[in-house]
Image (cartoon, rainbow, N blue to C red; front, side, top):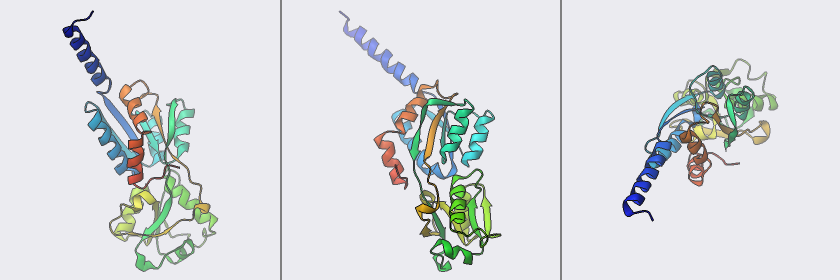
Length: 248
């Protein structure tokens, strides 16, 4: 029968083992607009697992996918458009067992309420309108689809200002550089001076889920898979709701 000293030693070894498992570095690449929410989630996880550190990389989802394809050190990728996750999966760069929806978002138009813009058709009166580059920024891709479905292609010709990502679109609206900006609802809720002028009708664009996935490089790291599982927890869901994300 084991002695008290043996039991104590076994317990200490077990605790040390658990601590070691989650004592590592997690490299996250995430869409620029998710910065506040992802920082919140990572900080919450670190409080529970103080041995874990996070290296964070932000940018347009398409650009981040290109970085990963070119060898950038990334353990977990959270994309504002699922297509970039599956693009990398098809390149055998993702762990196919660990891909899941992260959250949902919608797009709105923000700016100065004095502009009188309150619907898609009113955009024809605007001088300049910011949208993220549709080739790499999902919010811009959805905005362009909404513009086309509204039949505003020709009316807005020469008015659109392409930004690198949704945060730059937000900045342009905040500074008054443009009359209106298409951004995600979650970014709009963080605006200080710009206001939501209107919500883009859901029937005008295809809403796709933010999607997360562990890369092939990250699949062998326990702290990465633990964080991936944490992102599906009730606690993580509450954080996402706080920042304005939808869960379906």
